[in-house]
Length: 158
Image (cartoon, rainbow, N blue to C red; front, side, top):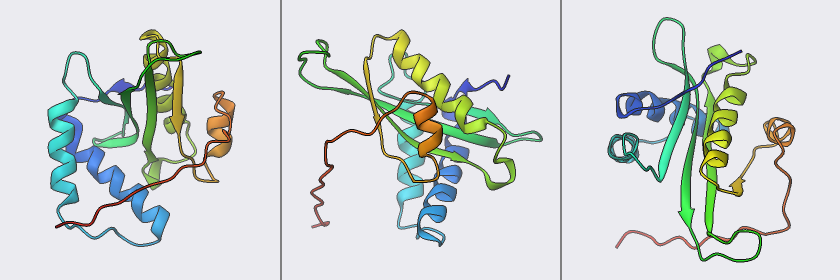
């Protein structure tokens, strides 16, 4: 069985590297670094070692050093309602395996560990967005499509 571990602030640079791998695979080109790498690294270093985190990641170490895969998650607080009285919702994102380590179950191990972490904290709803290639993985873990359309408002910098 593949063991995923909870990431620490020391993993921040590798998590940012893996995020760049994911973004490049989505767009077909290396992402422009307009300061996002530094900002993402700072955010991760500030959040990953918190005792009651609202952002965390699970990782699989690569043989020889670095990270082979990761899955990052957040906990969002909303007002409670039927089916989710506490209003806590998990969100899974930044699931990526380094190209040299794919097809070994590493992303599955990371997502499984993250979902278990949510379950242990009583979080009953976990959302994610999937690429077509990853949809079978998430479906095998119990995720289902929803009818909720996603919308976004984006502000430009002043």
